[in-house]
Length: 176
Image 1 (cartoon, rainbow, N blue to C red):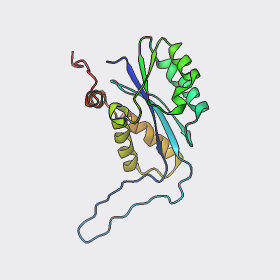
Image 2: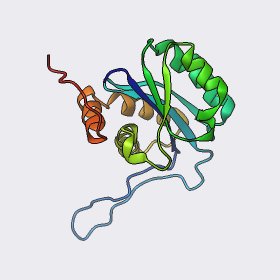
Image 3: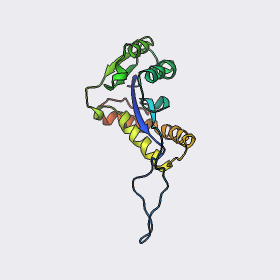
Image 4: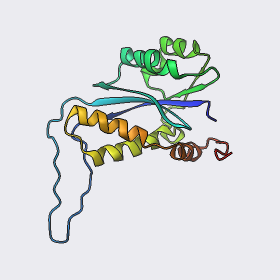
């Protein structure tokens, strides 16, 4: 099972804060956020049973050039022959260059069925990352980058195995 690597993207921004707050009875809860938080920050990451792997952030949306650069310079150096790279059906994932770069590492490319976020364990990992980013409530790009790094590191191997199992993957016992 450690041979499956799921790749996906998630967007975030500087105005990301908790959706709900608490305060003592009779008092208001206050939070600070930015109204005009600028461009989105896109996170591209690899996810396996060991946790989050090769990742990259970029200002704005992921386009073909950015995704190709991620595969070439960030993901490819971490791949081992025999791994299966699982991608959703985003158009930038389907380029011949992406397939060529991954297959040159001795890996296979598989695509998820359309509209199937319940089959990809990285969606649950991104949910935890987003919750941690809301808690961090970063107000500068540097603080957001640091919060993203900390959130990615917070996805433990136990979390990863549970997310894969929840999506129907058979994961061998890791305790041996």
